[in-house]
Image (cartoon, rainbow, N blue to C red):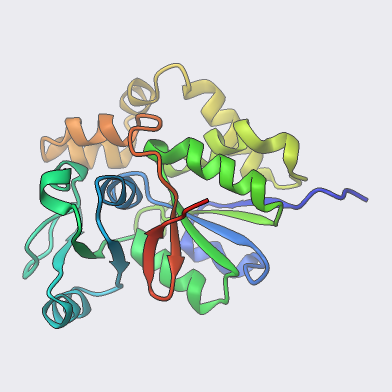
Amino acid sequence: MSSKPSLYTCFSPALLDLYEVNNAVVVIIDVLRATSTIATALHNGAKSVIPVDSVAKCIELGKKIDAITAGERDGQIAEGLQYGNSPFEYDRSFIDGKTLVLTTTNGTKLLHMALERGADQIITGSFPNLSAVCDYLKQQNQPVILGCAAWKNRVNLEDMLFAGAVIARIRESFDINCDSSQIALQMYECAKSDVYEFMKAKNASHYLRLSGFGLEKDIRYCLTNDVANVLPIYTNGKLLVHEG
């Protein structure tokens, strides 16, 4: 019997019930763009990011604690919120020392689902903080669930590719008996020389959606390794930089 911890990949929030989250580190993956933006805001000095699952809650909490309220629905700034979900909105001169309350179509929803199911630890991951995620998972030596936020429960390519990128780096440290992890790894092996061009060539649905809004710059950034290499960890209702 293997003494290594297990690693599973969950391709959609709709499948989360199939996995044991209560003794695992759950990695919330929403590459375009929630978890890329969370890493960026914290990397650029945000005090914390508070993920909420509704626009109304976002507005209410923002007023109560005098925070920046931000988020998107269907790829665009949600009505009633000040800012959207682009990492470029959260440079250091704007976000340093501030609290960001964030709601998104997919990522914050999955985070709250993992919480409700008793996840032992929750961190967020995307290409901009790939190394921080991999280093942390190896250090913890605990079971891991790579949770893809997908798009309205439909599997998407970019979250799968990020799961594959993590697996490619840490697979020697884990026992992986999971076909979705193998699929993610194989897809990443095909894409790794240029993930952006792979997404484009495969007509990835979220690539098409965001490029339709003129957001190619956002897409490129969100697929770039280690440009915001901090580890956001969920603690008492907030995502904070893990001081490891």
